[in-house]
Every structure is written in structure tokens, then in C-alpha cells.
Length: 63
Image (cartoon, rainbow, N blue to C red; front, side, top):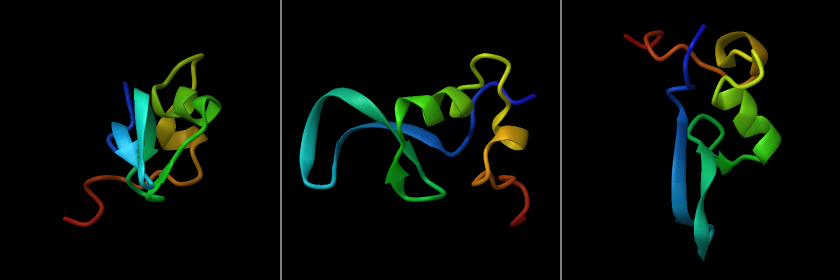
């Protein structure tokens, strides 16, 4: 089980806006994610990004 998705970043700016609080951003989809999706990314509630996210890409797959 992964501790946190390696494709998750937190950004304070994006889409031409500045946010008061950093928002979860998926580098695979190139988009900000909803808080419920970030729960999967952060492996909360026994969720695992590798198995529970349909967008997950193995970081070592391109090597």
C-alpha cells in the first residue's frame, strides 16, 4: 500500500486563480481534484491510490 500517491501535488495557484489554501492537484490528469478524490490520493480510510484510483500510473513504468 502506498502512503501517498506520487502524482499528487498541492498548489496555491492554478487556472488563473490564487487560493487561500493549497488545493490537491493530480499530475496525471493535469487537473485539480475534489477533496473526496484527494482522500484516495492520500491513502485515507484504508484507500490505496495504486488500486483505488482509475488514473494511477506506476511511476517506474516508463523506466
